[in-house]
Length: 384
Ligand SMILES: [Ca+2]
Image (tube, rainbow, N blue to C red):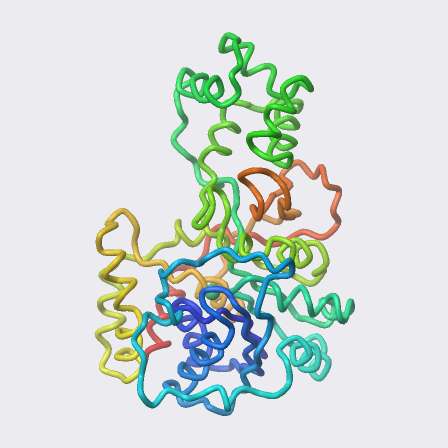
């Protein structure tokens, strides 16, 4: 039996991930901990209880966790998941907060893992506030986990990106840094001290270091500049929501969780999108679960239909699938990772230490390629 603890900010894709785990044979959810994120923590608790009711699993305990990020700063998730986090499609018989456990989320996490040492996989699909608090209360918490599965963070484009022409890069660098230099000179000064300050002011210090070290190692600065400029965010320029919503928590988790860590980054989920035709068949199943999903997913589907460039992406489900079935993972990047906490544009961005400059002994598995047929089956079964 695979034992899971799930930490969510129950938006629509968290609901999809929870339903995937509930439907998977040989998987037991020991508890669901809630944290603010897509919506307030009270809404998150209500949403989880609603999902558990639809799936006929009211016995799974739900715990209320952090109401704010570690520093108390908020970053709006917008209305993508609806104001209530679940597509603004309320149900009159939805369960109330009286069903939430009295025990708090963080102490419940620690207790449950202590009761099942070495057996629990923690799947975290939300800002990492609860998870970071758990290691601060109990520094031995990570080593008692079987694994940690995260949805969050950025990679700096592991897929080949269209390379800009040298003249386009030159123009960008000129515009950004006001360098009055020729093309060759611009490319060669990337690693030099005199321009670092300018870079740091524009890109954040972590980025500067990456570019500088690349230059020192005589890699193609041109390619690196391209990659940096193409690193994708979904809430800030290059920040993924779960990390950007609580960068300090993400930093603590990536630096203090020495258990096996698997990361489904934003770019990875984008690359692993499913066709909308799959989504149509998925929702057309004649079940209460599918009808429920159709209601809560309606708003997102309508807003997505205007953006035909992107397929169907259930972000949180990719991390959940990795915890449920290890054979779904085909290829990972095994790299040390951390999080940028400063910078003008890059706060909350995951930093991947390709050159091992940070000298970290612990490395994370960044999902690169997965078995999408297995993923589709897990998704389908979630609504059966
Ligand atoms: Ca989430």
